[in-house]
Image 1 (tube, rainbow, N blue to C red):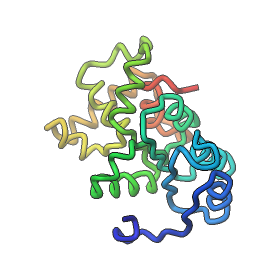
Image 2: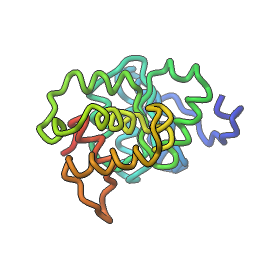
Image 3: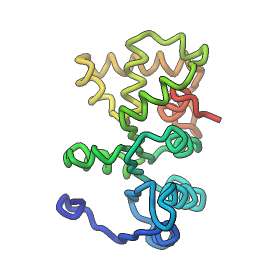
Length: 198
C-alpha cells in the first residue's frame, strides 16, 4: 500500500533485531512499525523503535498496534521530541488518513489514535494547570494530540484558524509553557495533557 502511494520502502523486516539494524543502517524518513514482532510477539517492535530513537534522536516512527496499550503510548511520548505516531491497525483501512498520518510523522509531527487519547485521559487524573483550560481549549489540545494542524483543528471545530491560534496561545500560557528556542511547545502541551511529561 505504501508503494502504491509513492513511498519508497527501503526495508521490510519481521523481527525486532532486524528492525533495529534496518533503522540504524537505513535511517529512513519514517519507520512504520508493528508493536509485536517475532520471536515472542510481545513488544519487540516497540522496543527496537525506542532503541533506534535513543541512538538517532528524533527518528520518525509510526507504531501500529492491535489494541490500545497505555504503557506503549507513554514510552513513545516520553522523550518529548515529536516525530511519533501511535495508531490502531484498523486505521490502515482508511488509506488516505493513514498516508496523511505517515506524512505527518515523517515531517516531525505527532499523531495519536483517538482511542489512545481517550484511554490515556480516562486513566489519568489531570493536574491543576490543565484544570485551568476551558472546554474549547481542551478540545483544541485533544486535537493537537491527534497530530492535527491548526487548519485541520479549525475545520473540525468549525472555527477560524485565528481562533485556534488564540486558543493555542491560551493553552501555552495556562500550562506555563513560555516561548523557547529549545522546546517544542505543542509537544510539551500534549505531554502535559497526557501526563507523560518527565
